Image 1: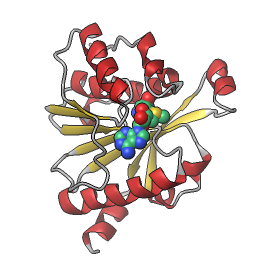
Image 2: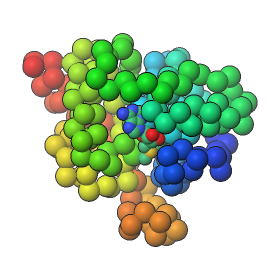
Image 3: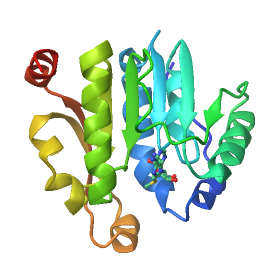
Length: 194
Ligand SMILES: C[S@@+](CC[C@H](N)C(=O)[O-])C[C@H]1O[C@@H](n2cnc3c(N)ncnc32)[C@H](O)[C@@H]1O
């Protein structure tokens, strides 16, 4: 039986993002493909309301760490865990970008490439995690220009795409599709040799 996630009018509390429907696509991917997270140590970087973290836990992740610099995210994530009958997992508000990468098996990023500078820093960070720990990375993005035009995009392989409903398109400046990506295997080889 497929897991379902109860989510939350609370989602939009976090940073004022209209994340509920965008993030829903990342959640759908995780719940439909439990092999992605099963038995893995997972970091949800920029976790917002924690919906992807909860989906990872429901899909069998052995350990989940949610991270968002907005302190409201911690509260909302804890409430969301309760709503889903789940023991809360750790949520940290510290900015982890720039710290020493932990030994994680999977990093989730949902709609995190909305600013050029943040996108650059994330790309460096992810590269470091891949090089030191061969961490897998799953990126969900609704086709933001800062993402589509970024160097990182050239190294990613598309896994799935979801059409966004009309109401979401209107609220998000005409974004039409939410796509999930992983780094292509070739990129892993390049990172190992640098
Ligand atoms: C567009 S929202 C996406 C939230 C969630 N991943 C989703 O898909 O609904 C971006 C989130 O990233 C968080 N954020 C921004 N910079 C961050 C950083 N350096 N480290 C962790 N979180 C960050 C924001 O607080 C915000 O909650």
